[in-house]
Image 1: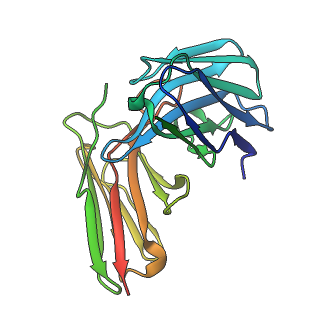
Image 2: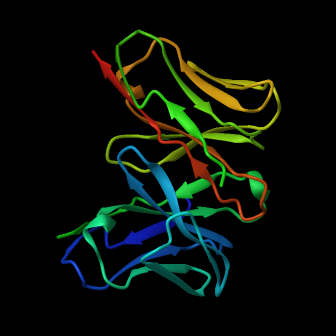
Length: 115
Length: 112
């Protein structure tokens, strides 16, 4: 268990509303990632972070922003949710010291439905 | 970015049959990681392959990395109902940020 907690685990919201998903880790790992999972697309990287206030875009970043003001928290925000953002969102961490070849540890996921 | 194609998308087998999923790329892969996701669960790391032609085994699971490092496969011998789930391959690329590019996944159903 890599000590990753995602919240909320389930959320239903309406189009146009803002949504924030939280990823919390307890072990001070440097690298954190947000992925979304959709049928037929596997897992696609939204944003990632390599330190406090250090973030960058992944392959599907449009419509999403992130923040990391503390090592333990990585927030994913949908400023104005759309139905195309209905998905399961996974946070992941990579343990410090494992190098570029280290495996990812995933949280339990957050299921978001945008009506 | 790196494209990793995974086939088949779905596979239905009878318990006891073998199963194979393939991961292919048009360019050389630096490494391959394999993950398993149980229904309703989250992806869990299985193994990593780095060397050309590498073969690794975990009980009934055999993982291979192609000689040209452009493909990989996961083979399960004599499937069991506990093998159901989605199997993903992923490549970390050459950056130090450890970003993984995932294949689309293969959903395995095992009929008892």
